[in-house]
Length: 111
Length: 114
Image 1 (spheres, rainbow over the protein chains, first blue to last red):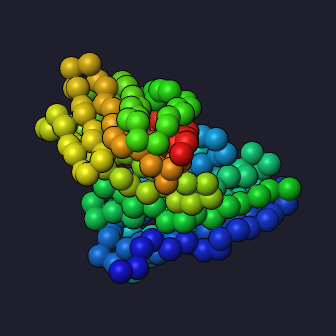
Image 2 (cartoon, chains in turn red, blue):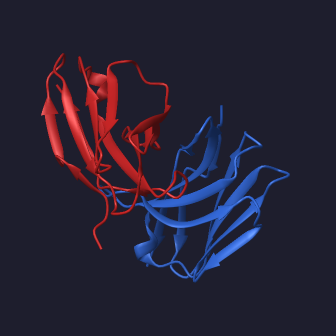
Image 3 (cartoon, rainbow over the protein chains, first blue to last red):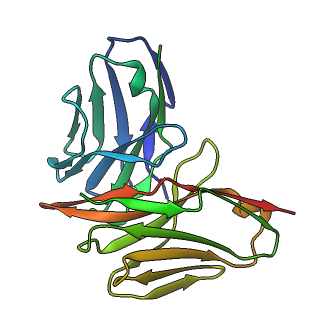
């Protein structure tokens, strides 16, 4: 029974670059949410997608964008990277939107 | 918007003792309250959850209680074991228009000493 998968595991970028993170939800789950977890803090909500439509967005700048594909996988894009974007980016999968199961995350380091 | 406060930030217990972590939330419309366990370098793992129409839920050594009037909920771990050592996060759903996002507490680092 495959869980939520994310790629890549780790990523190192420099300021000003852009990054694309990928997530595959649990089979049968149609909702994907993205969270940012800074070291020592709880995850912060970025986006939620359901049936390929954006359903909600957190307090993040327009440099952050996402989309969901017909197979329910999702991408998170971050443009013009800042040092403060360094964090663990978590994808969560759910059937509807409440009970959410997290992937292993992508650790992004911005130098 | 929703705000979730979590206490204590760290908790040290001896193996076999009980541990209690408490959270309060601000949005009375919140209706779903999960707890996650996160070991170092790993994903948050859902360990138990409770909905607003239930006051208590148990799963082996873990239980969660919810007081909607006071807007607080708690995680109880009995007979703690060293493998329970991790960071625990509470969360509450903040219902939005057509979606629900999880708002997390700041985490409790639990250390269980043998």
